[in-house]
Structures are given as structure tokens and as C-alpha cells.
Length: 163
Ligand SMILES: [Zn+2]
Image 1 (tube, rainbow, N blue to C red):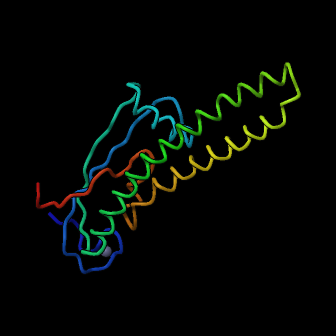
Image 2 (cartoon, rainbow, N blue to C red):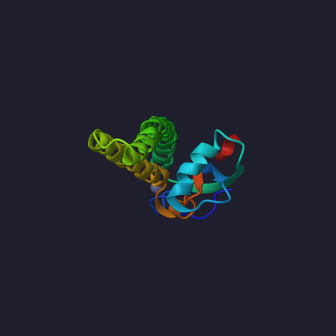
Image 3 (cartoon, protein in one colour):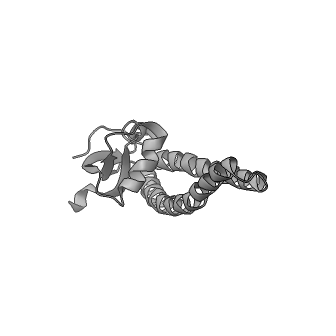
């Protein structure tokens, strides 16, 4: 049941445990790149997506098995937090954009402060989008990075003997 003789993370030979990693990919047909990364998070709250799930079995040294477990938990928690932040940021940025466009055609008196607010909103939204990318790759080390590419994200890691 243990494929290979070295740890999937650190490539050391002292492999002692076998773990199953469960992966999930939310496939959204039309978008590509960073934009798709945001869209698939929205896809979670709509029905317009297909979820692909699969499992892989890996050998780990004890240390890496533990590290990978907590990194996956941390990444899962961080994604929920970032999604909430993104939602709040867009709730602010989108109305600002509409307001600035409306002011451009009518009243120029308050254009500057609203444009600055819009700029802040865009920067914050972009930072959140970049954080998503970082969080996406955070749990995976060594050979696992080859599997952990967008749109495939690890959702869980369990002991292979439990199944
Ligand atoms: Zn290791």
C-alpha cells in the first residue's frame, strides 16, 4: 500500500506512514487564470460548477505527515477567511466603481475622494486575490506540488490504514 520508498515531501528514506490525500477541483468552464480562481469561489455558492474529487496515496516520514496535515487545515481555514474578506472588499469596491463612473458624467466636486476610495478598494481586492494563490500552494511540498496545481486543492489527509 506504500508506493515508493521515500517521503513525498522531503524525499528522505525514513518513510514510516502511508497517507491518503483527498483532492477537490471545482471546474468552471469559461474563465481562465486568476479570474477563474475568484470565480470558482463564487461558484461554490451557485450551482454553475462541476466538482471533481479524487484521492492519492503517498508515503511520508512522520514529521512531514504531521506538517502536511496542519498545513491543509490552515489552508482550508484561510480560504474561508479570505472568501469572507473578498466578499466585504467587493461589497465596497463595486458600488465605488459605479459611483465614480456616475460622477465622471455629472458632478466632478467629489470625484477625487471617491476615486481614491475606489483605488484602495481595487488594491485590497488584488491583495486578497494574490493571497488566494499563496494559500492554494501553501499545503504542498516536494512531489505533492506537482498534483497541487490549480484547480486541484487538497481538502483532507487521512491515514491509509483507516480505510
Ligand atoms: Zn518527509
